[in-house]
Structure formats: C-alpha cells, structure tokens
Image 1 (cartoon, helix red, strand yellow):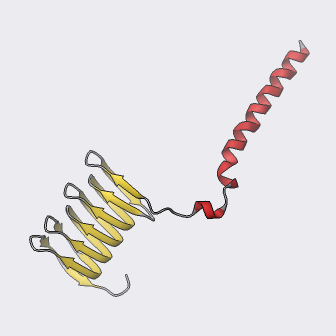
Image 2 (image 1 turned 30 degrees about the horizontal axis):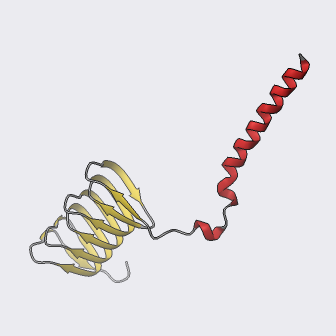
Image 3 (image 1 turned 180 degrees about the horizontal axis):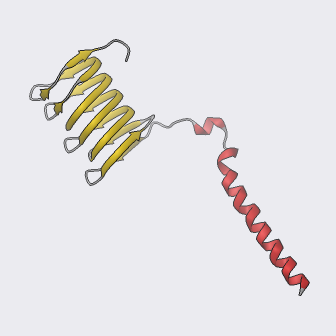
Length: 141
C-alpha cells in the first residue's frame, strides 16, 4: 500500500517537472530567435474592436476600431474604419478615419475619407480623397 502512494507521488512530480520545462521553453530561446519578423498582422472586415492595438510591425486593417491604433506600418483597406487615434511611422489609407492621424509618411488614396487632424512629415493626397480637418507638417515625429 505504501509503495502505490510513492509511485503515484513520483508520477505527479514527474508530470509537474515536465510541465515546468514546457513553461521555461521561451526562456531557452536564443536572443537572435526573438527578433521581430517582417510579418503582417491582418485584421479582417468582420472584426470590430473597442480598445487599443499596439504593434511593432505591420498591420493590414479592414475591420473597425473605436480607440487607439499604434504601429510601425499601417495599411487601412477600403472597408477599414478607425474612430480614434492613429499613430504610425508609415500609413496608407484607403478607408475612413475619424480622429487624429499621426505619421511620418502618410498617403491618402482616392477612396479615403478623413475627419480630423493629421500630423505628418511627408504626405501624399490623391485626387478624390475626402478630407475634413487640419493638416500640419511636423519635423521628426
């Protein structure tokens, strides 16, 4: 009877140690493997977000967000809608933004509609883009 309990105890301890080894897996990855990849995060039309999105990479956005979106590179598709604050190093807008847009390089396509203020270093506005608000050039955002 005592041997059965000890065997059971040993099995439980082995499972715990295996589980803790799995948890430590990320700590054993070399620092070179943790570098950000040049991948694009896609947000589809059917996704509606209330809150904030932060990314150190690229985002292709076709859904809707009410809140803040901060990223290195942003592509807002024709069906994309942002109600809030956008902060991106590079932004290509085909959809709608209601709020503040801040970026180093901003491109407003002919299908875009902006209602708010834009702060930029470089901006390109195509014929047909609808803009209601102010545009301010700022050096080194």
